[in-house]
Amino acid sequence: MTILGTAFGMVFYLLQVVSGESGYAQNGDLEDAELDDYSFSCYSQLEVNGSHHSLTCAFDDPDINSTNLELEICGALLEINCLNFSKLQEVYYIKTKKFLLIGDSEICVKLGEKSITCKKMNIVKIVKPEAPFNVSVIYREGANDFVVTFNTSHLQKKYVKNLMHDVAYRQEKDENNWMHVNLSGTKLTLLQRKLQDDAMYEIKVRSIPYSSDYFEGFWSEWSPSYHFRTPETKRAGLSLLYGPVSQITRRLLNNCVRNQER
Image 1 (spheres, rainbow, N blue to C red):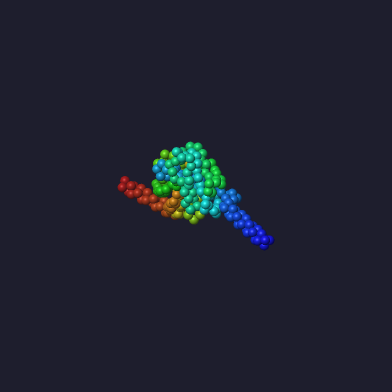
Image 2 (tube, rainbow, N blue to C red; image 1 turned 45 degrees about the vertical axis):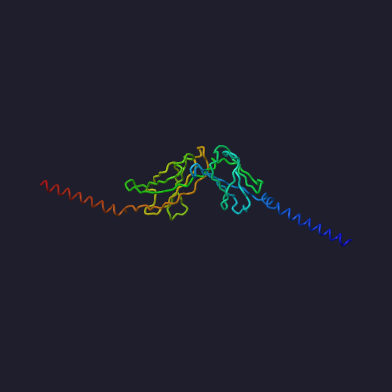
């Protein structure tokens, strides 16, 4: 009887151990998630496809294990309370017509039905414009300058029309020596005398919403770079050579006139 009781006791103990380990495993993902830092950042792009707006979010820590994590946005939506993000590799993405563009929304990181962390955001305050394109540089020989032009899709948009552009240019051999010019238009003039003669230059543009406007946000991606070469100016020796020649020519003409008068 003692042996049988001991056997039942061991079985009962093992069942408790297995049950305890199983219960810990079920809650382990959630407990581990609460210990990790699941901070994230988002940006919006308005009118990316007609009247559709997009919202893109990503975790600040690129090494975070986001396999079972979802993102959800609630509030400031049309005809619906909440929307779930689609996951594209390490990025969470929504494209919809449902953004109200007025008031704050709440974006939450979720594991199953539980929210791990949430953040309030206003879609119109986290706008990232689309990158400029068609950068071009034309040299005007008579004016001794370069006319820089570029295009932006925001000229045809209803929202986020007011942008500040950052034009960055450098001599190609100077990798980190960028010069910057800020402007609200899409045309810039660079004086030839401020650039190196007979040198290759790289130029690119990015944009950001005006801080004084209703829309605020972040710098766009850089446009594709445009490369151009400055002309070689006349050497000093050539101007010295042409100077005396013109004087000799004038003297010969004066002599001819005097001979005719005689």
